[in-house]
Amino acid sequence: MTHADSGAGAFVVATYGLSKRYRGETALAGVDLRVPEGAVYVLVGANGAGKSTTFKVLMNLERPDSGTAQVLGLDTARRGAEVRAQVGYVPEHHGHGYGWMTCGRLLQHVAVYYPAWEPTYAEHLSRAFGLRLDKKVGTLSKGESRRLQLVLALAHRPRVLLLDEPTDGLDPVVRNRTLALLAEHLADTPTTVLVSTHHLHEVESLADHVGVLRDGRLVAQLPCDELQRTVRRYRVEVPERWEAPPELQAAGLRRSHAGRELQWTLVGEEREVTERLARSGAHVREVTSLGLEDAALAFLPEELSP
Amino acid sequence: MLVSLNPRDARPLYLQIVDEVRRAIVLGTLRPEDPLPSVRELASQLVVNPRTVSQAYQELERDGVIYVKRGQGTFVSPNVQPDDRERRALSREVALRALRDARRNGLGVDELVKSIREVAAEEESAEPASAAKQGDRE
Image 1: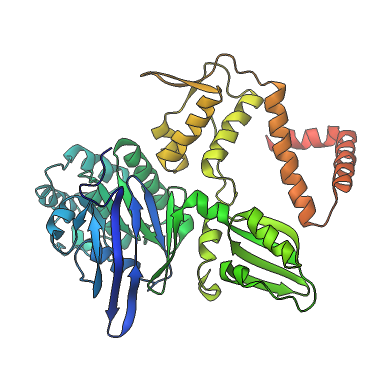
Image 2 (image 1 turned 90 degrees about the horizontal axis):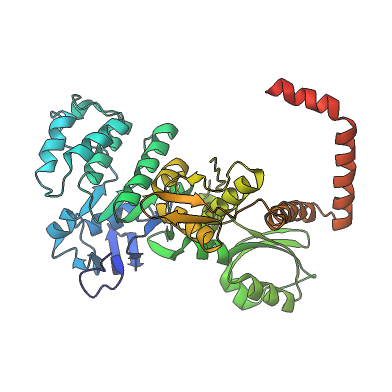
């Protein structure tokens, strides 16, 4: 595998201090995204957290107010066309704008733009997705439209896949088949994937990196195994009028009280956190590791979690 | 080979695959020289990142549980037997899960062990009935 073309190091997708406001509303605030080569990076966050805006900036469909973005070492604002040629993109919205074409005709139409387009692979994917090529694009259901977008994104085996809520509108059976096809695709083709979702569990088995967007800020960004190792739930018994030491307050995510028992999700190596808790007079009763989704959700405000 | 993963499990996915392969060997459903699915096949079947499968296979290869025949695929090592060590590792894993559950419920080790023996003895004495029940299910 080759590294990114320029000084971007091993990051295939990188943003630097990306900020964007829409009519006074913050969409992105200083986002520094780092997607390593070959990663399947899942960007998770509630609706409106800034996921789609990030994708649009990467595709140069949207200009940031400040900050820059690079894909494969190319500045997306100045070399947008080159970037798009090497990217497979599934946009947030389902529309194609070619309603009068049949799916088969649209595939031929798009194929022309990509020298690396593989007609046999496009056929294979269409069949695997159960897409009828003689159907008019304008008559597709939401789910069919999504599948067509996925065929268009994958069939030229791009080096980068930017998938904005790719499983949105798919029923569970099709979703599973889609992810299985994606797994096969990754086994056959070296690809870096940035995928957004507000349901991490839908794509978590493919993920190896996670970024958490909250109100336009990237509040966490790390490999999945590190996330699961460093975010744990501690059940502690605390003395009367116990106050958490400041360094633990800073590492604290979610917290709930029941009598003298405290349940607290904390970031840090378990041994260090346990020692700190013990030193502060708290008695650690139990430490629980969290599943990937729970660990990531801990970074989001509680009222937004399902 | 049947591998099933549990996304709620806090163990990393690659470790779950490693454990499933080891379990299959202990149970005898995977025997020496049996082929394993390719990385691509297993990734697709489990819907996981192919890298996760590779990582699991690398660990199993390092431990001498499986080996790669160039161009032919991955196989269970000829000298792998469901030996005491593997059985013990599996048993410890089950014990750890039970122990964690017990602690969460405020139970001590002695209480847990005692209850396991009691329940096992009860099951044994009621075996004909439960065997019939299992037969019905199949």
